[in-house]
Length: 107
Image (cartoon, rainbow, N blue to C red; front, side):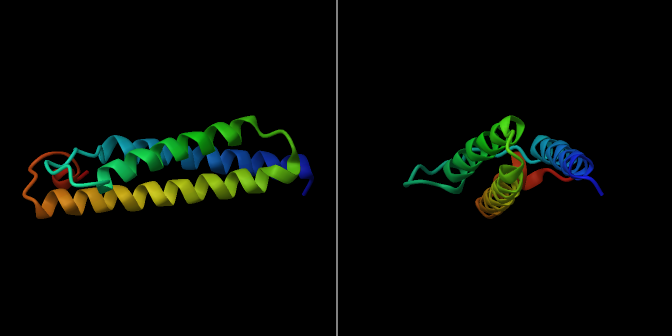
């Protein structure tokens, strides 16, 4: 398989992953918890979302073939971290009796 063909398959896979992530994000919108005691999972999820967007931008802009693997790794790691924190926010909302947002969203 040629290097260009491999890069194209990688690009397509990552773009599909981004589309899946965006669909998940629409379903699992975080709701800010009532308590403001230090950094909450909500705040951490917001930061993780910014990191994911930065990783997406890096992936779109990378031109060096040696950096493609790094950009994909960073994108996947940021996605997994964000999804983990969204789950924590959902559990926190469910345990605090939050009736809207992540705790009650099922597709």
